[in-house]
Amino acid sequence: MKRNIILTFSSLFVLLTLTYYAQEKSDYVEDEILIKVEVPFNKNIKSNGLVKTEIDWFNIYSKKYKCVELEPIFKNETGELGKFYKIKFAEKEKIDKFIDEMNNEKM
Image (cartoon, rainbow, N blue to C red):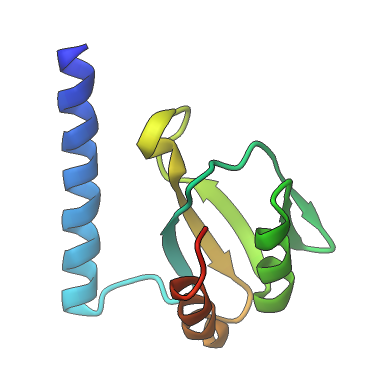
């Protein structure tokens, strides 16, 4: 149990450090973002090239902002780490608008 907690926090620390470093150096993937949701997605399929899940609010934003990939950052994780996802967009120009809307919504 103690080892799992240490590994979880170590993984989270590495992820946050890499994210911070990438933002500081402007060395990042332009068409991807990382998000954390309150409730993890149970399924993830593609419909007409866009991501579709069982969560309605995400499907609305996926269609509006052309989300083409949704992947969990930590594979096979439960708990808090299971709520982190990487989203890839078809059009990088829409990412800022997506982020602005997500900052005003509760996921």
